[in-house]
Length: 295
Ligand code: SF4
Figure 1: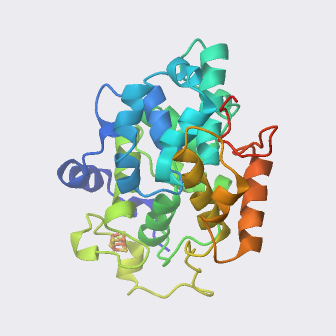
Figure 2: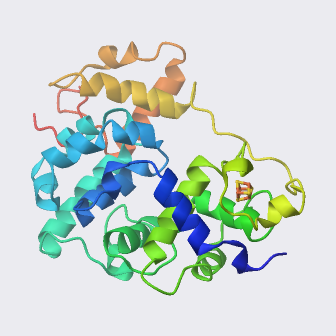
């Protein structure tokens, strides 16, 4: 096993300066709220899809109070095709709490951030680091993979363990104000070069990578299954929400039925789960609407 010194801060940060993607939420002048919005959107969603939504979103709702003043239905509708629409509901709730309880300012304390709806360990640390410049470990899947390979000489990171993963990354952070830059660079490297299936080691600035030096030993245990989307209940939920988003008024069961003709039991199950999540309420006359619509 190689020590933590196998990640050179200078090499990594220089590489980031030259090769980083220009993502709008990383630009100077983006507010903590707008960074928080990007982190909500990026959970389980590719950057390319977030790029198509985030700029208009933050122009329309630049602050927590502006977001809170919108209806939950408008927020879910604008969420569009980002997927996992419960995040839109949580974001709306989060905006409401920040506007009401925190003077419309995103808290900078991780423990306080963790009390906000929809904000988990990763998001709280990402906001503390990227919005407020704090020296805290920010650990996503990409970071875990780079550290597993470059530092520990393993093909993948194995099961997550927050205390171990945070300690691993904390040990790598530079002591000065460069920690946020180092963190975003590590994340970027995992997203664009040290990818899960085809790491492009020829382009990598981490010349001391332990896994590379060990000759790329294979992962222990079975390879992880890639999550499928086609044919899942998640896809059916997306189809049903598409019908509701396209309409200004509640829709009938028959209008929803045509959204998924393959398997009526699966369609019913998906609709029940949307009702249970509060994303889709039933109106008094038995039709269906987006949450937050008033009829
Ligand atoms: S050398 Fe290859 S495996 Fe090692 S960190 Fe760089 S891209 Fe990943």
